[in-house]
Length: 167
Image 1 (cartoon, rainbow, N blue to C red):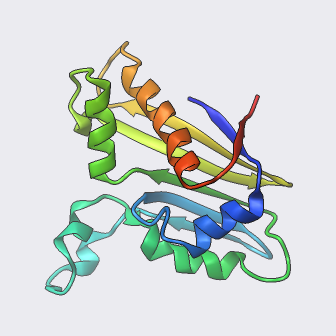
Image 2: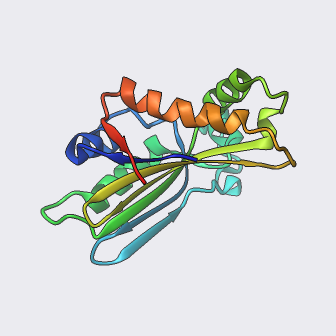
């Protein structure tokens, strides 16, 4: 696990809320604190789409909603003259990204046995991103966690998002 502090909050927020940069990430949870606390559970209720042939199979193959589907709701909650009191987003990579990270680690573990995530948290005047990796099986091998901890900073650098290590 690593923790990164966002150096330029305005730039980051524009990329998070007004660009396609994070759109393929899956959202486990979103919480926005303004005049009320708004909590979104990102788990997809697949029964909601029962007998609806217009829903893409890719939507039903995931456990969580994509950020591109929830971003407009979160943007509406955050935008305005007042800064939110805080927010927290728990993201997971889409399956293609997760598979690539797990396979690059060459740990011999099936990607279905791994859950990779990032927490994006704003409190006070600080935005922090922390990485996380959990396994559905027992493993002492940390190569997947290290690969994920390398992927996120490189993803942010490619997106011109400046960070510093947070201690």
